[in-house]
Image 1 (cartoon, one colour):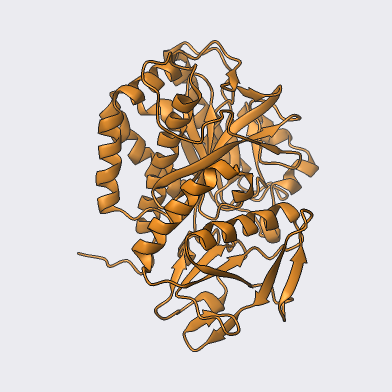
Image 2: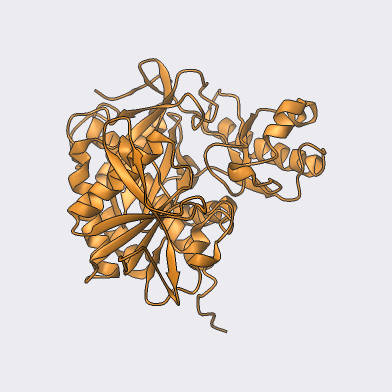
Length: 431
């Protein structure tokens, strides 16, 4: 079974799938050479949208929190990738400290944390959890609905090391995106590997930097395949100093939205696409699907209700919003059980380790699906392998579809590595 595309405009994507299959040896060699020069994020996930005429990543998360949505058949891939990643960073590692998000009452998130423990335990590490939450003052056992439990402990900082009572790790894995800022307890660590680095956190990171890097990657990849990079790249703009409740900066935002819609219309006309263009206005930093809206016409910004303006004023942890990315909207024409769906691809080190579909029965093809009411469906084929199947008709093979998604996700991961290098505060600068 392949999740069905409801649009007739599948020509360019089927052609892209065929081009990717035909060019697989060159693609894999290209990635191999890139990873000789660049360090992949320790782990990442990428949201992908397939419009039938365009296939593009729309979000790249460097603190992925949905590991519990991967099927048991996918876990061996994750364990192997975890072994490779740890071996590269700290071969003699014995202890891994995981720093989760502070909201320790969300059972779905805690399932994700437990899944990370399983993966790294199988990779040969002792795994314990240390919380940045000041309310955690002693080891706290949290029970999950499935009957399992995990223990979250207070972090202990001694001199230039971070650990727990009777637990000194060489590697610290952040599963906390640091939206509220970088706590001092994580700074100036000595001979401990902090993964990802703190500048990957949302208090520093900007989506516009990521998609600028992705634009560069997509051009080079497009040249390798002989395709128009626009087929795999969402156009974007960026606007600062916007205050939705006060109406400040909306004029500049309207200008940016209008300019981007005009660019999209030109591309639609060139490809004979009859869909209505739209853009997504999102926080330039932040996650959890907050502060996002769909805009089809720049005039809509002048007529926003007070409720929507307030919704666009803060993101996770109540952080105020003033910087926005305006991103080309990519329709999703995939369906699972009649619900709009989009694939989310999970990676560790440079390897694709699994994926699932995010679905939302109450959202449209042009809306953000990362919202309350979303559900998750494992990959829609029985094999956990990602090997493409030559000779299959484009669009008909699950493994081929997901191999293509894995290629696009790895392009986004490569862009994240470019982004992290460019924004590294400790990078050596040469004149």
